[in-house]
Length: 499
Image (cartoon, rainbow, N blue to C red; front, side):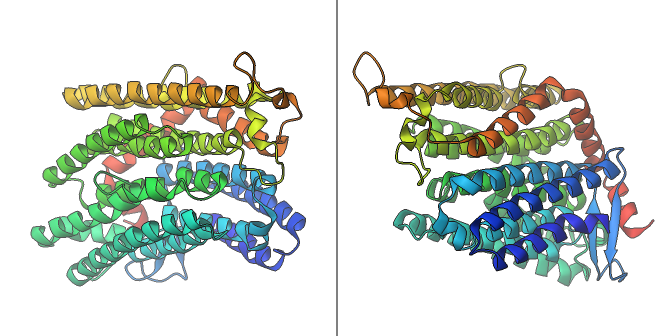
């Protein structure tokens, strides 16, 4: 039953939060307690899979081909832990960073429902339930996107929902074709049938449909345009939750499904993924350089660095897949932290009128230090976790003589560094213009608008992400076990089918 806890805990928490939504303090406390319990459950799941073993839970003891199966391996275990850390950071900060009206409308419960969808997608062992969990994420994230009813939120939500519904329909069509051809939606069962007996042309068509569906979810080129149109519209905590989790689930689904069903004999498909990854990195980084405001800049950087993850997988080497897995975990922490910092910098806190002066408050060095370390990690400067991940990916590209791909990865790293340095400069110049030409506004020296409740989670994410770089060996060992499991699908198939 351990594998069910990452789904049951946030689901039960969401149900209780609905009952307590009028009691905002009690709901905020329950939100944090539920997130702490989720962290404990996810760590327990990871502990069972740390040695490279694969654990399976057959719900209801139905036959594998028709029953619900939950599966945990090194990749899903690592992602579950990072997901729970992101959810915990957002739950702590939300008690002050989200206005009272949104909390009364059920902000916390919808956050927990979205986490339910994420954890379900990471653990499910069949395609139809993957579609179901995607829909749970879509519905809850749509509510979070429009909560508050501001005009720009509604405009962003229309684009977000329309494009993601196209992805959902495409995914459902692909699942229907596979079920008609193979008679099952279980991933392990499908893997054996795709390899033995399925029409190769049908498999190629399904592969293209999956690539479109997961490419939209992951924001791959040219299917990423919905993300910068919607992620900058909600409060920064909502954007932080989205940036940390949603696109990564799309990448995870791409890795999981393609490693099982289309690992061998689909060279053209992987070439397409590699080209799309390179173009995603370039267009995202160039878009970030062209933005002046911090939130839109972060949206484009989010897109650019999705390309690193899919690039490593598209190389189809164990070193490339290991680098991709490490980079996914690192990126979830870093982007969540950066979006949370953006909320402090631009002063979204509705409870304090002086919020925009937070950057130059007596606690400015903590906010500035967190931004600096997170920016270093995203740009891949040593000794951050981003450096470890990018070094592994570039080395993997060089090993298979993809010199152009490695060059683009390094060039995008420079563009990322430039965009973040420019963002730092623009923020400081904006704050300085509020005072005299010679010194900042003296009002900036008052008690800062943000509190430890908001600053603490940012510092925690910063320490966790930078710690991945300083103590990279155990985390990278888990990433290497992930690469071995994904590159040898027979281990997953044997664990699920009991063979």
